[in-house]
Length: 144
Image (tube, rainbow, N blue to C red; front, side):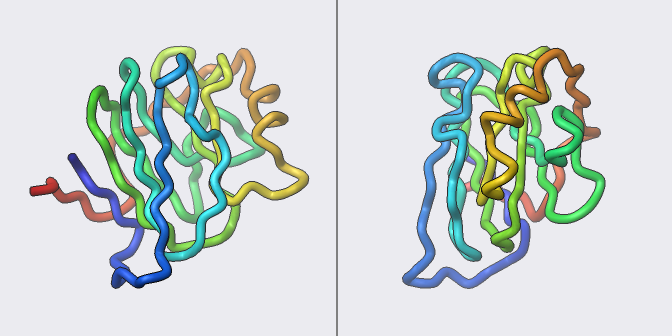
């Protein structure tokens, strides 16, 4: 298991964990929308096929974000990756493998009310996903 930390944070009693199954029901992130606080952990479980999770911009679906809080899990299968949240700003992410994003494999962390996952899925249709250059977004560690 690998861990991604956007920033190193001390664990607090109030921090929550949010499980996100990647590929469990086909080309999906389940759930596809999570509300998370600073210090919460997003637990990505790559349980069905080969996928990744890449932060993109809402207005440019299937393309890695060029600014702001970003991460890329790298392509995985049968593994797990954790991301520690360091912002409550909306983050939108997608799977860059094959045509997964174009087929609606997108999701959100703290989505804005006027920028829904449903609308993002519609705007992603038919787009060619841009694969990031590698794993990034924080410190990676191998779990014991």
